[in-house]
Length: 125
Length: 277
Length: 146
Image (tube, rainbow over all chains, first blue to last red):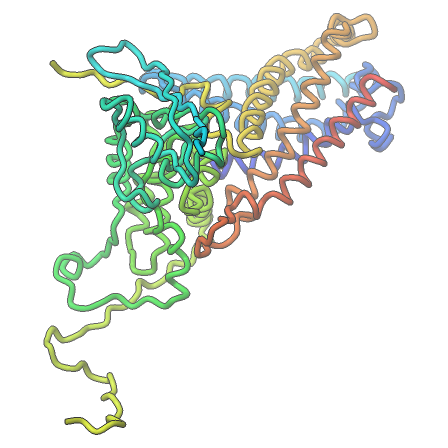
């Protein structure tokens, strides 16, 4: 795939991450500045009650999957770029490209399953 | 009245292939004169202390690009660098990094020229016959000239290549100079070679391996600003992918007659105002 | 006898130092380091957060009040990741703008002293780095002082 295409998607994924991860950081680490509806059970953001409350919301399931996909693509393309600029053989660079793609797909599938299963489990509580 | 001459120490990185396993620093103490450039200093060393010292130079006035070397850790032209502007006591002069060293301060610039050739640094037109046997000049307005003029001032000295972090590790990376030149020709209104040059630079270890370390623009001794050219090239390629690029018509050709006579529509000169003999 | 030239490439050291002329050079190095740090954390984070699928016990074992990941060393590590995100995101905005040709200025006739794209983008760089510093400090306050 031509790198102008991959790089354009890298930038677009970065934009998606900026928004979604920014929101995630707001909820998790800047609780004073985030709306109460995102931590409905009060207390800390990572308390089990809050996890369940967010788990029920379709908004979070969808945004987690989007963030997962964007972050995996952005991060692994970045790592592939760094490896590609090292003074190593062409064969190794190609191998890394394939391996990172497979890793990314595997982690995306796992994470998507976890997001959907977590919502299912939360709905049942 | 005797004057004590101010002395300066040049630490020069010497390397003689066949004799030395690796480069090593050697110190030379020479008198510091007013207005002395690093190039003048090297000549003084060669004249008085080390006739075997080797380096490249030619014009000694910053237009040929031959004398690029690493001066106190920064790649720049030796002829353009006043010694007193760098230091009054000690100065370190080494060969350009990121190239093999042939000898002493002489880098092997073959990769520079090969990568430059790979981006086809000349006007490409779809009409082969016109390229081989031109029938007239290409039209270009001063405004169209401005789009690439800055990047045409490049003297191929290699300082940008020495400063580039990507070029330090990636042997396949074209480097700032060839990439800037690929934009110089792409943005030239006379050129129709965008697709060909895109193929040359839109690949792994191509233009998108530039991450705006921007040392190339900081190091360039001629103000060519290769970083600007490279980012503009990326913009052109991304806009092309997103179908934002307006494909311009190639510039026209002024068809002239290859005679010594006056061409049509060029007015006659006015009458003489003083009597002619 | 063929004389062998000496390889004078800077290698990975060239990613950290090299021409050493501009501030933007160090932003490049830091952007790489923070990116790798965030990626390493993220790959682990996918597995840690998936613990919620298996119920409150598995979640609390890691992230509950007495959870393993509540140790101070992990809290400091998490703050470093937050700080890395603050820098990487804002420098990333700068890079996205610059690498798409904004902020670099138009091609001009070079007249000494030369004004390069570094000059045209410096104001935006300063503003974004200031914003990054604000985010990092705010996060530090939340993490350690609240």
